[in-house]
Length: 506
Ligand code: HEM
Image (tube, rainbow, N blue to C red; front, top):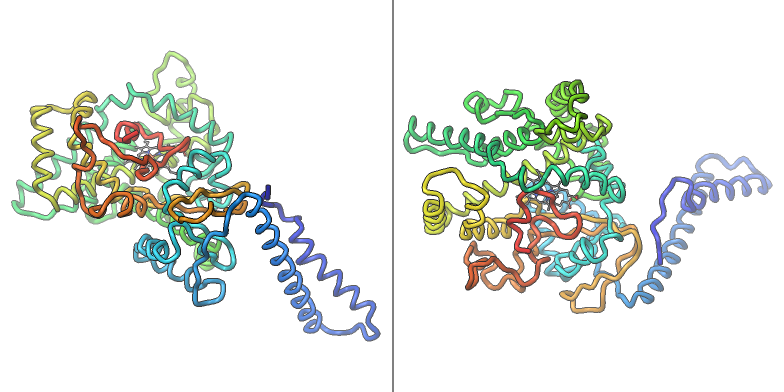
């Protein structure tokens, strides 16, 4: 089985630096007129490196072909760009990232090259799949052979450090075990925190409507604030309360608007690094894009953390109940830096995803008012105007279908990525070939957004918002292939979101 190699003093360093230098020195001393000058030596070095590179590449291709044969697999189709090294493909990705049309670029290529293809940017394999069976293989059945990887960790390092999102293996298990007790049903069923902030939200909307009559409301901004306020409250025991200062915040100068903007900027920066791939550093040579946003994020988190650390001794007492996630982490006696990383990781996990789901649900309901009327009728008949309980939420089946349908068409995490540790064969049934050969140490991206909009899986009305597709005879939500609907991811690294499993059709 072929394994990926790492470490700076590896055979590549020997072949491309020490061997040519040795050969040039040997030629230099063996030559009758040793004083050849820098240019000739440089050109000789280049020539030797090119010969070694061509030799290596043939050798590597030969080994990969043998390994593929051993696994009974065939090569993944490669995208054919117009420029050397598929530079035009790289530029298309950067452009798609800037104007948010990355998904469209990937979809076009999947139609041209099949559901699993290799972008091969700068001669480096970068594999994309929109085949649910391959996603199942990567995140579930072959979980131990696919990791987030050190490269992913480097892309997110200044922002998320070594938190649950960016680590693998034992450190990841440690995070998962740490988080689990806090996300138990009892705590999640305690809706007080969410009730408080949703009241702030509703009050704001109705005050605006009463004072100005027929007005436009930027609901995306309000939901972002609601999810930030409730998630910071739940995690830090200290809410940003950005909804309370909303009138002032419209000038975008208050601390919480700045925090929210900085958090968004870091999320976007790290995600675009993932989409661009290994060459991301080239696009940040002249500017440290994370310095300013990280200053703002730290100025919010650090004082809360410092205060909580001072009270740590109280939390170590087993009889004291931990009211928030920060206290829960401090009581586990973790290093303060790791506590900080973890808080930002869970804030990232919970805030933007929740805001996205709420915003797109309202967007869809405004497009289809008759569906909004049905949702309202269901809520009124279940709750008669009182706040919801967990039991109520279980009964709101039509609302749940609407949210599933929103998650299907607008998944808050539209793309995801893993890296292979050892070579393997991706089952790839939709490619209608033999299994496809995945070499060791290569990235594979998969897209819930594109999979959840496939006509061959979801039918001819795949692009239509139709909550009824989630309701069958006995009003249970259903789907034939669980990996064709994966807004919360699948396998062991599924979202440890408090409510994801309740929504998730599994
Ligand atoms: C609509 C809401 C949400 C969606 C669609 C969602 C989706 C996801 C997805 C796709 C992943 C996998 C990410 C990856 O592979 O890197 C994930 C991971 C995670 N989510 Fe969520 N999430 C939601 C809400 C939340 C909330 C509210 C929390 C907690 C407050 C949360 C906690 C986590 C954690 C801790 C992970 C990391 C799991 C791991 O790597 O083991 N999520 N989520």
